[in-house]
Length: 109
Image (tube, rainbow, N blue to C red):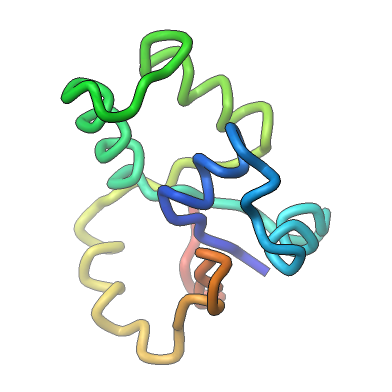
């Protein structure tokens, strides 16, 4: 399954994994699942960092890519096709309390 992590779930995965629910941990650790993070989440983290609301141990342009690589999370670009496709995600809902969104099979990284 393709899973889109929201900003909080990515930060919990990388900084405070104990905050992830057991269901989220199981889904993230399932080697058959692919993990994605929207570039909008990356932009959000950078903006929060620049406003001194989200400190990182390294500059965001180093810290974020290192965590993406370590946790095998693929950055999902925001391109017009993805923006328009988002309006067609009628069957997708966030899995309650874990911050993961199953992506439709037609969504490709």
